[in-house]
Every structure is written in structure tokens, then in C-alpha cells.
Length: 494
Image 1 (tube, rainbow, N blue to C red):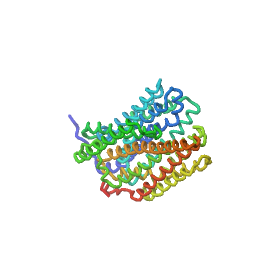
Image 2: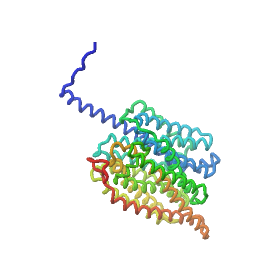
Image 3: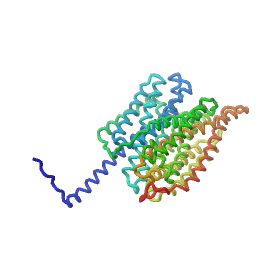
Image 4: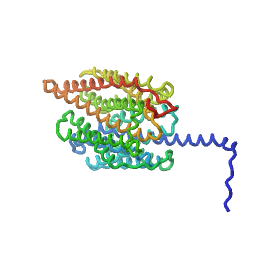
């Protein structure tokens, strides 16, 4: 005999409501905290190899072009996988996606730590990148789902720590490890953190989103892989070739990638209204989102370009050791981390424009200051310029993340996160390619004119900094069009 359900009266519900709300708040804090720590760990590995490449070339008897695949393969995998995350985040539970991401990352880290040679090490980096590519869109989509608009700035400030500080301190951490330990410890020290996050997620992470059945358009997946992969590979190859980008295969890669990307865009625009797009580009109909993504791309170009150029300047021109160069960059990375939560609270109070305009101006000022560095510059202008750049980027990232995703309707959150992640990867690869290629071309022409290597390198770096500073002027112009989206009508074109 089945007993009838006991009715719950209104006073009981009113008494239980605060307890339920507090329980949900604790759940959300655990989910967001775990995702933030995990995302910081995986993003850190995106730039951790830059300082380690010379050591790896010696230990593994590899050429420079072969060793560069440790970075290229990582960026290439990210560019191919990120567009698919929009489908994954809609189709599967939060917990399932998180466990898959951290499993890939931990497995890749283990492969790298035990790799007997370069091919296996590159394979490990590819497996790592799959997990990294899934983690960042998962983090951003979860936060805009759980956090109300009036509190989103503070939480997005924590995302900015992940996005900006992790790649900024990657070379520093790598330099410190290599000064006392074997290169395998770059991965060996990270592996327990990844496994710990995986275990904690398995034990404690709960689902906070509701999956829905969405179709997977296989032609879009193929076009995405060829298009984004080809463009990122071509741009990375230009940078790694130090400006010697003349071979036909390189330009053929860019041409094929660009053509596939054009067809991919056309197909997504056609499938978007039918709710079948792999990457729904209707996100760009929202002006707030579009402007924020454009500015974010410029900011990532600056960040990744400077991560490459400044260590080159400090080591090849000023004669600093890798560890010294890494430590000089550390204050800027820490500054971004300290400012990110403060900027988040300021965004909640004042909105985006009052932060991104001075932020863009500071980034531009820092790049122009770097353009003044010479062959015999003292260290304090280098430190000052990097600190100024870090403050400017801190003022940019949080408002741009909050404004871009906050302007979209809920059904486009996953697609918006994937668009942002893809734009970051392409912009980062473009920044490295642009800055390094211009530097190398000017260095080669100066050497041909009879200058010594030191003077030629300094001249090449200076023209690269001038190029970056010139590009930053467009970012200042775009900053005047950024604003905080309306909490009452997200997703409406503005």
C-alpha cells in the first residue's frame, strides 16, 4: 500500500528557502572554484615550452624547426577542437565534459613527462591541448550560466587571472624549473595537480547545466578542422620561419585554410537559423559581443607577441640568462593577477567603457615605450614597460569577457564561448607570426647592410615593437564602442 505524499505548507517552504539557496550557492562556488583552478593549470601549459625549447633541442638532439612543433602542435590542436566545444557543451552534462577535459590533459601530461623522444613528446602535447581546448569554453559558459549579471564582473575577474596570468607566467615558471631540474619536471610537477583536480571533480562536481539534443553537422567539423587548422598552422609557420615565409607549401596552407574557413562561415550562417550550426555565428549580430571580441583579439595579439619578443630582447640583446629574463617578467604577471578581482568589482560598479579606454591606452603606451628600447637600455625601462602593459591588459580582459558573453541570450552561451576561444587562438598565432616575422626581416636586412648581429637584432626587435604599437591604436578606437550589456535584455542587438 503506497502512502500519500505529505503536503508541505507555505511556512515550511519559506523556512527551507534560505537553506536551499545557501546550498546552491555553495555548490556553485565549488563548481566555479574547481573550474578556475583546473583552467589555470591547463592554460599555463600553452606557453610553458617557450623557454624550454633550447634545452629540449640539446637533450633530444632535435632541430629548431622540429622542436617548434611542441608549440605549433598545441596551438593547432586548440584551433581544431575549440569550435566543436559549442556542440559538446550543449549535448553533454557539465561533469561529463569536465572529466573528459581533465582526463585528456592528465594523460597528455603523463605522456610528456615519460616521453622517450620528440615524436612522443609532441603527441603528448596534442593530447594535452585537447583537454585545454575543452576547459576554457566550459569555464566561461558555466560562469555566465550560474552568475547573475550584477555579480558577473567579479567572477569574470577570476577568469582574467586564468586567461592573462597563466600564459604570462608560463615562461617564468619554466625558467625556474629548468635552472634546478630536468625538463621532464615541467610536466611532472603539473601532473599531480591535474590528477587531483580530476579526482575532486569525480567526487564532488555536480551538473549545473541541462543538456539538449543538438545535431552534429559533420561537414562543418571537417571544414572547421581544415580552415582553422590551416590558418593557425600557416601563421605559426611564418613566425617559426622567422619571416622566411616564401615556400609555396606555406602559402598553399594559408590559401586552403582561408578558403575552407570562408566555406565554413557560409555554412554556419545558413545553418544558424535552423539551430544546426556547429559554431553559431549569429553571436556577431550583437554589437556588444562583436566589438568585445575584436578588442580581445587585439589584446591577445599583444600578449602573445610580447611573451615572445621581450624574452628575445632580454636574452639576445641585453645578454640576460633565461632565468633572469623570466623573473623580470614575473612582476607583470603577478600584477595582472592582483588587479583582476579589483577590475571585476569596478566593472560591476562602473561598466566596461570606463575601464577599457584607459586599459587600451596603457597597452598602447607600453608598446610605444618598448619601441624606444635600444641596444644598451637599462633594465628599469623594460620592467616599467611590462608592468604598464600588464596593468592595461588587466583593465581590458575582465570587462571584455563580461561584456561579450553577457550580451548573448542563454541559448548562445556555448557558441559565444567557442567563438571567443577560437578568436584567441587565431589572434595569438597571428601576433606571434606578425611580430617575429617583421623582427626577422628587419634583422636580416640590417645584417646585409653590414651591421653586427647585436645591432641587427636590436633593430629588428624595435621595428616589431613599433608594429605592435601601431596596431594598438585600433584597439583604442574600438574601446569607445564597448559598453556593458543590459541586464534586462541580453542578446539584443545594440
